[in-house]
Image: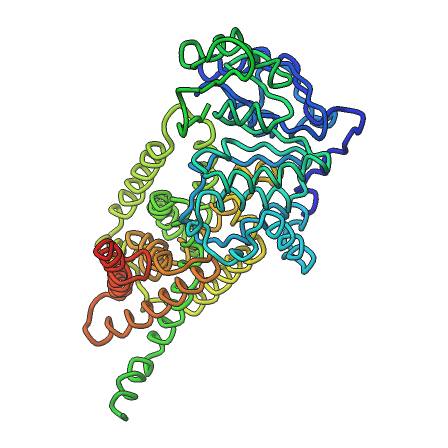
Length: 272
Length: 285
């Protein structure tokens, strides 16, 4: 029965954590992503921004190996994503069944079930890992709560802890900050900064452009195609933002400290 | 005191009642345990359909002189796998396809029975169960299949949990998701076969869904939901059997009615998810 699980792909250390070349995907006849090419170095915290329907979720699902692109090449540490077990993809909170009868620590343990193996039960060491992950995100005291009983920020941290328990090396978070208050956002950033120090590659889909400019190493501006990818002040130019958002973005003209606000989309559903 | 004891033991002076009690206990435990996944994964319609699809298998086994369970199991497993495959690649919505197969197979089953002489009696047994007609061989088969189901649910506990709660995570962990889904469908077919003798094709759905839904209203964890629904299922089975003995109602419907009453009570009174709780909370503020 052990052969039911394919062996995880080995990591090519000289290869970048995420590499895409000419990736395209359509749903029916609508183009969702067109000719995406980029390469992401390790230990980077990257914000992925763009209007609703820009293809952020689709991009993540392709990197995670859940969707297969029609054209182009996706490599995670030098191999196709389908063989990796080191990729954590945390969906939007609206995608989770919060009334499911399951506790916080059980959700976190799910990150380890591949490591535990078929037919086996979690060992003491596995529970230690879960405890450690919960402590790192600061919600160990909630271990035995049913997940629906938590606040939005706590719920988001449960899934971050799951990625920690999985010992993920590529972490993809789909709108983790939407609807959270400042302290909850800070708690998430604290963990993300730690992960970054450990060399984990992290991509975060989000809508708050100011936050993206302040807290992230690099930003990716996406609207079906990759408009720009690089340091925030290089990417968030007037022309690029207009290209991505059309008229839906307010730009305060001239000089330093350009204030930008994405007027559409905040809190919206984004399933593409 | 003696009277109560007499009331309790009286039914079991008959061998067929003892066999019926064992059969209803097996069904009362196994069905609700797997039923938790039926409820959590929203497979109720699929379960009902599978139960009806099995009918022609039962009838053909009867005509060929095979054990009824063998025919039911064969058709049930094939149908479960076919539905699993159709649902993954099709232009029509899955529930419509299930509906087509469900109605067609059921019609075939009834048509086959209607060609027999003792049509009315046998059809009623298949539709609504014949708990008191369970033979020793039936009982052993039910016990064996029931043990197999419980063992599989235990052995693949964390895998079934993850494909039910978060199939996307199951994919990124590179688990064999469609294989696991098919195993779950096959288990569902087996459980339905076990229950047909007890409650019949028409009421199997209640055994799968009602105790598990009751437990869902009360439990906060899957293991307690499974234990609780098995408890409710077996209690209802025993009480239903007493009712059928003393009040002279058919045993299958009696069991299902007991389960339904327990569900309604839980729906009204359960902490957190019950109606009364909701009312109190909104009134308070």
